[in-house]
Image (cartoon, rainbow, N blue to C red):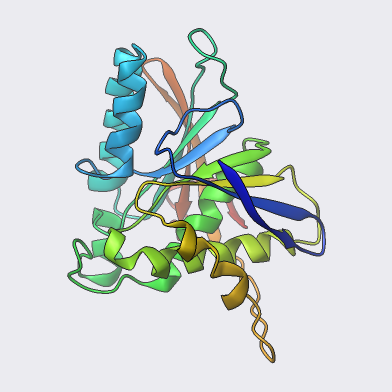
Length: 247
């Protein structure tokens, strides 16, 4: 694992790291953001790593939550799961943040098409909103200082989504109010170091400036079997939830 660069913003700086070990569990990460699609994906790799450590029951529960986020939720739903791995390894991981992929039901309901295995170029707006909301879940709702992010799209569009996440992080550093976020670790599954080095290049090119536009979300809490969870739903109906905020 090595540091690549820092994003200097109005409120604080964020250090960007790269880890090509394809491991999700280390002693630094407080929250990991991972897409919820089952198959040859970062989600499956994460569950395999947990299973190898003997967390069979936990993996079973995470799969159930991932299925809801990917296949059942009609609107983009970021689900933050509370976990505790300190019994078997030195880990600060407390949150698993599941996000819908661009092959999810929620993506189809919004765009009336799927993006999977290079069928079409996924929406930049989708990745920006998903990334921002996932970081909000981990940092504002979870007080995380160090987060890990894996690839959230088919690897054909690796650069496409990495730049969207990079823009999200740039806007996050420019927030007026400082947050707990200090470091972001890009996990190496399907994300290459050379792509990450392009993030500072594409952020704020000379003569242009982009700004974050508030995203309306609904928040609800729940518990299923042994796991507490919190859903943050993008574009909720007022009838669905009592707590609706802009982030």
